[in-house]
Image (cartoon, rainbow, N blue to C red):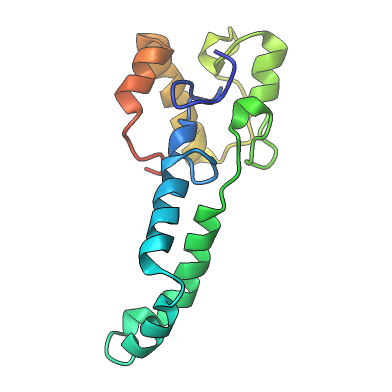
Length: 148
């Protein structure tokens, strides 16, 4: 494994397909579809709707976020384009000649810059991959929400 794809998780174990930044991912596809369904004029309707459905007052912020999701352009971490500031996982895996962190004899280590929650998830993902293998892990998690 050495390229990003739906069949190949990032070196940390995250599924690129489920990432908000992945150009070929579900988030970008669904965001673009929602843009199509809303069309260019829905903002005018939202402006009128907010007088009796106050939630629509937040439509401009929602649309900005939707547009952001729809413009995803990341080719995946294995392409060398990690979007997480300061992430050293890909660089570290390449230097050690492994595809995933769990394959390194020093895992888990302190080389990542993850906050506690992502770090705990990183460890859990890699422990699970070590238990069942990377391919089985992908099958087990391919339809799960990345942001849990």
